[in-house]
Image (cartoon, rainbow, N blue to C red):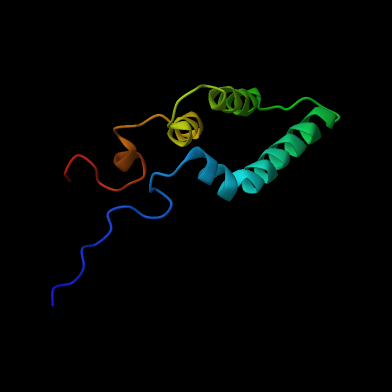
Length: 100
């Protein structure tokens, strides 16, 4: 007897209705947003301004990007918080690079 066909999507990536997503994820999303809000409140209440304005700017940019319609929010956030690609990264880390 042949093996049953393999599923090509996981439960996390399978398409489902917005209502089903909200039913499953609403409390988790709410908790994470509260955690972000609490961190921002701690930054605002700090006795001195942050020395690293670039990180604060990235946080603001990430929050603003979440307000955009459409998908790919996770990819957008990953790009905001990632370093730009460095073609010479292998050489910089002593890994040979350039086919050595």
